[in-house]
Amino acid sequence: MERGLLIVFEGIDGCGKSTQLRMLAERLRARGANVVETKEPTNGPVGKRIRAMAQSGNAVAPEEELAWFIEDRREHVRDKLEPELAKGSIILCDRYWLSTVAYQGARGFATDEIMRNSEAEFPIPDLALIFEITADEGLARVNARGGRSEPVFEEIEFQKKVEKNFAALERGWIVRVNARPAVEVIHDDVVDRVRALGVLID
Image (cartoon, rainbow, N blue to C red; front, side, top):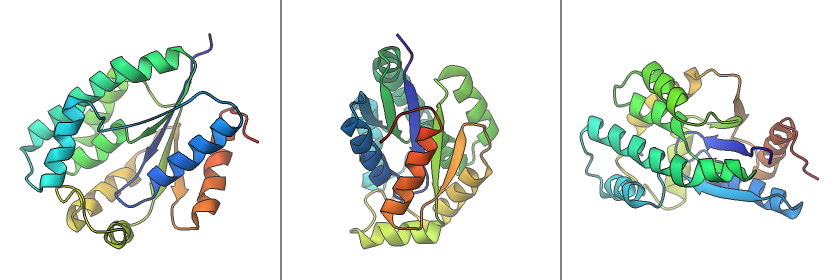
């Protein structure tokens, strides 16, 4: 059986990646593809702990935060990503380890070290879409949709560091998407990028 595809959706808070993931999933399913939608942090025990911490506004030590994300990812890869890739599924993942590079890098960790360790341990995406807007634009969107839900991360100076880290990432499988146009325009761009992988989309 042909191995599946791992397509990840990345960017700062408010960039619109989750909306684009759902739109692509619907488009792929309409033509009969076996699509798996997933996310990090996951809904597993460690992922729920991360979300509770982020929503509480009470940050943990950066070292503990980084360890939680890695632990959650190991479970995610073992229990979901690898089995679904082996089945030939198209996996659409809302955040993956590029977010750890950008966000935990903004906590002061070496981004190149997180990147190197992640590439050595975890499946490398077939395509990583980074949806680009500024930190100011992203938080304005967050506020417009009801305010900050994860105050540990949704803070302007922190998001500016995250934005800078995402902008510095360079790999052949990373593609940057302008996240400012209408959602339908962005969706067409995403579809074109996925078609380039050889995926049939009507």
